[in-house]
Length: 258
Length: 273
Ligand SMILES: Nc1ncnc2c1ncn2[C@@H]1O[C@H](COP(=O)(O)OP(=O)(O)OP(=O)(O)O)[C@@H](O)[C@H]1O
Ligand SMILES: [Mg+2]
Image (cartoon, rainbow over all chains, first blue to last red; front, side):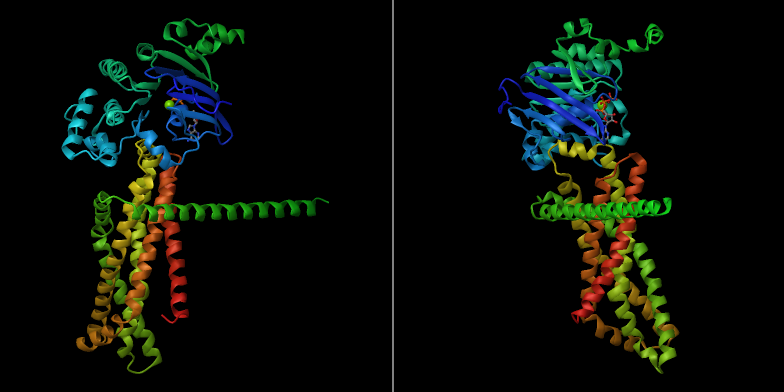
């Protein structure tokens, strides 16, 4: 077992196992993400994509296996020690998870108020920028309950961007958005890659946007990464797990055969 | 042949259940104590802006509870005065003279702190458990952690601070209104002169009774803050889970408040306080 991660990996996951009450969700996940790379993870609903993502910033602790972030093994770090690492990892939650007692502006600026010494004006300026980036300029005063699902998602993204993290974890960034909103978010993700060289892991059902923004795609199936390749190659693969993901099992001839 | 076997199985099951609930109790008190420890440590290392949050919470604890606390302590103060004078009349002549001091004793040591504690456990403890539970199941607690904030410091510390400040103050307020209820009964129904009534009560107010009651209130505040936060932060299983956490927060706070009260009273009299 090597004791240091290869420095060229920003994220490295080794033999990750996680079960909930006897139900195994992750059964030996291995993956690597290089600096500046965006890894898209596809997988059926309930396959454990969100669970996997939550291991990358220590929100969940594995039963076995390791998670290395920028050369540091994080699975056994205390919450306090995880703090500085989490500040470099922006996370967009699947359900947005906005703080509903705070305004949109306070949500986006949360980490800036809590963890930086920036002045109020500086924070407000940064919040304005982040909201503009996700197409919600001027919505600082709104309350999360006043937002639609897609708007919440975008505020969640703005909040993840506020600290200018080097690594971003997106859980279904485009679900619940209309086509224009989706194009806008895809554009934003690409711009972050290009201009800030952000390293990212993107979990999604949205195959089209996964194809557009990912440098590499991985398929999570029955608790393991069974296929990992650049988009072109990925979609040409004849792996049976991929066909199952596409839903071919549901096609009549499959049922007749069985 | 099957009789004793069955009994043995029953017995085993009984002990297994006993063992499990014993472990559960241990786990629960361990978890709650741990949370309290983290919170106390958090109080010491909190930045100044937490005080703003504590003040917000204080408004919920204190200000908004004033009417209901006033209403209940006034009427209980009256009821206590009636009961005392009725019982004493059966025992002694001119018993009304003891009314002010007995009523004051009851109100300052027991009724004021316990009644206020129960009201606040029902109002504020329940609301707090529901709020934290909702935050938990909607992923807001995870979001706090992902943003490198400590949920205990951000959410529990201000609540504990507000309750520790607010509950003793509310108890003082309840004491005053309860005493006024007793005074009303004593002066109108029992024809004690107002000056005599105040003289008799005042003798007690300078004694440790008031202080004892306030110490109790402080302990109740710690109980309410700890239990409601603990229940809320570990809620799971959707809206139903939040409901369950809220109910448990109130019931467990009630039980602990009453138990702590009995324990305290016994301890105070044992050490002659
Ligand atoms: N906290 C938890 N406790 C118990 N089971 C859990 C928990 N979190 C996730 N699971 C289970 O783990 C499995 C994977 O869940 P996960 O949310 O990762 O799926 P997903 O791939 O993100 O699905 P979707 O695409 O629908 O979001 C599910 O069966 C779920 O029931
Ligand atoms: Mg998910």
